[in-house]
Structures are given as C-alpha cells and as structure tokens.
Length: 108
Image (cartoon, rainbow, N blue to C red; front, top):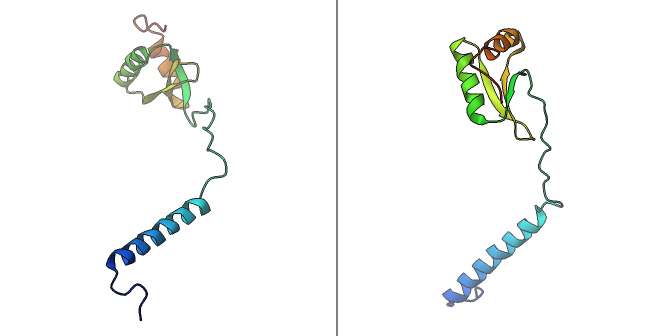
C-alpha cells in the first residue's frame, strides 16, 4: 500500500514541500557568513603608467584621440578622487608626454 494512494493533490503538495525544504537547507548550508566587502580602489594600473591627468572624461578622451593619431596605444581610468588619467605603456611614455604637452592639449 503506497503512501497517500489515490490522493494526487496530497502527493504533489508533499513533493513541493520536500523541494522547498531542500531549497531552505541548501540556502542555509551555502550562506555567506559576512557580506562581501567591496575591494578598495588601488592606484595599481599593472604595466601601464600615467601619461596625463584631467578632471573630465571628455578631456581624457580628447587626449586619447591625440595619442591614437600619434600611434600610441592608450586607455583611460578614473581615480577614486574623480579625476581621469590617460595610461600608456612605459616604453611610449616620453612620446606620449610630448604629444600631451602640445599647445592645443591643455589639461584641466
């Protein structure tokens, strides 16, 4: 004699209750003890060095465009204080600084 024979609703309720119980147990088992802390921003840009610093993203993009025209690879990053920096590889730093120090590329 099977358990709850002929009672389809009761069998379905039992199945869903067991699935819910398993879900609660899994959630309890794999919970985190403490909320994850956001990593503190660092000034480590890996292999890249700062070629220019400005206060606006638009100015950083303009500097990046000038560097691209001089065939210098670059990227931008935002510092914790809100300023924007243009980053280049160390081997291209001197050339990048010459390009960014031009008369039409003033930094804010």
